[in-house]
Image 1 (tube, one colour):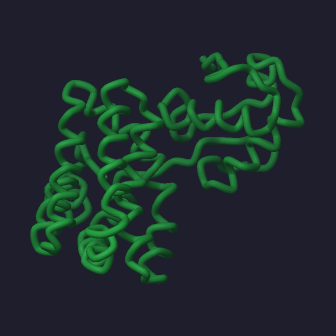
Image 2: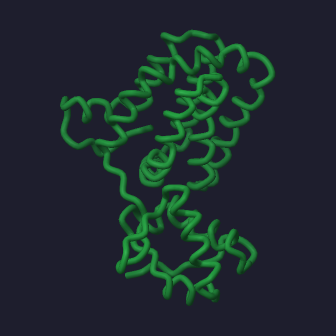
Length: 228
């Protein structure tokens, strides 16, 4: 049965308002990976015309959250556990390097920004705001790549982020019983990054997504709980 779409904010018929509503529905898992976004259904629920809806769907497609299939419609992109595990296996090698390159900036002018992402994550998890917690989670990790000053590293992260965002729309729900757990993990990562301890950062990162790595290397079956 199709989900009933509702405005996440004050009703607005602009493409941007529709985009934010659909994006929230995707990232909070309301419309799961592989789920179809039916134009007629959405337009009826939100009381809008097809024009702003199609613009919103195009923006979601450009962001990598939606794929349009000719003669079938728009669908939420699917990301497999193996894809995420493979990304994580590469991140385990390159993210500590990104953290090392960004250490000077993080210990200086960018330190408040890093700590703010952890605080934003804490607040979002306490409110069970899945889209906001995913934004904060990814913003935390993105900082290391952005501040590294290394174009190849930045390009790698940009290529991964949408897949990780979609996977987190499911994975973040596994923290519902203990929302503090994810915050603690990022507090530890922030602490070792600020200390400039690359080896400790790599160890904390490995602890952050161990199950996915074991699945990717064939040491376990399909895991039921993976972090990214």
